[in-house]
Length: 374
Ligand code: GLA
Image 1 (tube, rainbow, N blue to C red):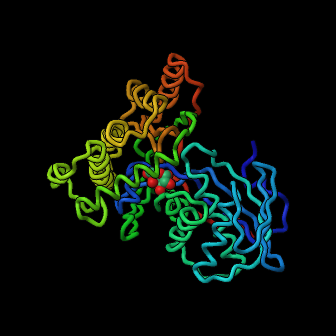
Image 2: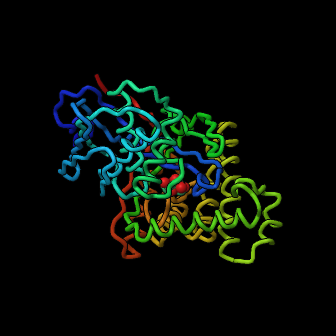
Image 3: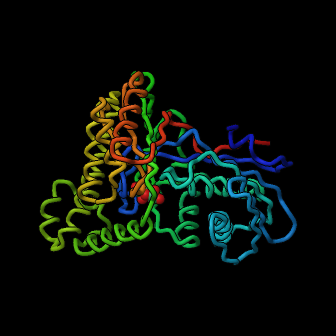
């Protein structure tokens, strides 16, 4: 199939921008605990073309659904177009004058695979609207606005990782983000130079219950922080973890806290390993992260656990689920020349288990939000 940018309906457009999907190398469910994450952008893009129109209404068409939706200011929109209307809402809430526009969307970011197709859409729409209106909205403040659109307009209680990744990631780098201070560091992540690759396996497991379970995990963390008398679980030091756990009566809550605290430390250890220039060292951290998500945070499903164990058995240095959980994708760190063998092993394990065939592709860290034309 041709690329999203080539499938965008013929303009003329006053502005065309693209925002990528993302994978998270490590640091899962840490963002809404004020912790650390380390995502990188995918080469798969959502591309949005925009044209200014008269009056205060917005029309948006999606090549994926074939639908066109029109909405006015203050109107409540449902479905995929809510991610567009939410951005208009968030910009206006922040005091920006957003002129009417006609928008078209084309996307190569797989939908519902945990690769942040919604953040890619929101960030690309924001880039186009900001450009059309000539607004002064620096890249650094856009993730918060896009997150607000998702949290308050769409009603999805996500953290800030996906919008930050889609906006701020740089080609060849992973984005080390402190979700409290929003400080960022671009960490060089050139696997090819070390003969390595990241294989993404989309388990294609249906994302059942994901939103309810996500909200429940988030609530549990917030309750635990209250009991422990800290602003967020980020404030529990690994050295104080056992003492903190001893103060919690609920066994499930203890497991949730252990995941978050150990996961934050694994992000820091991963960044250290990458700075030291040996990417193989991050393999065991990835696998430990997966085990923590499986046993303590309880957000994996049999399909993703099967991908991880089959990849490791076939020689991956490490493997873990990425994203919110309950399905979605696994990242496996492999010798570049072993990609096909690892993929074949996973396919074999899926066939044996009676699961529908997975999808697999190799990724390299790509560029965040960028202008395509004019
Ligand atoms: C989803 C959310 C993110 C983050 C991840 C889990 O992708 O949108 O904010 O919480 O789950 O790490």
